[in-house]
Length: 230
Image (cartoon, rainbow, N blue to C red):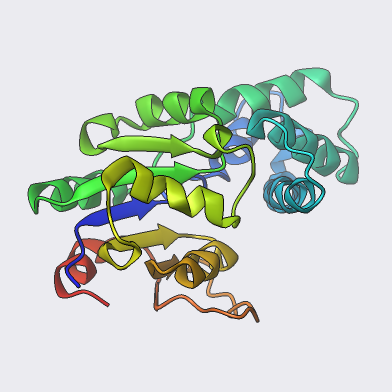
């Protein structure tokens, strides 16, 4: 079936989640962060994701901003920097201003020019997503920004993927879903979407009941895949 709609995860897929720690580390007076920021960025992201999974299975949903702050607190403590309140606040502030990956604006513009609908489907809360979209300057290329807050559970629960059909009236096989998270791309494949895992780090495929239909090192060729289908 023809791909009519392209849907993207936000954090780590369109927006560079490591940028907050990287930018802060380059600022004057951040010597303690300079050598620790890569590990802090990794721990922050990992705990942010793990906490969404645990909350989903425990039926203990929370705003993604709270989960993001909890993940940062873990990462800072692991690095021995949990006593620096100004650093914590700076990192949280920067998370509202994450840049898009370099190829994102042109890729989204090409999809829109092809006549396809383009959307974000994210764990992020509406306020966070609005800030990220505005900061990255990609709002003109999007038809919708969908948040899990409307269903009260994090990915990969199928209720989240159902939001796409409710928004656009699509059948799952019309949708190309793109995520930097292998488990997200796998979950979406199990739902019935055609899926791409943007595997920037060259990681192994997760051992799950479903697998992404394709892997890419970045988002550059997504318009080509949408054209030929998967």
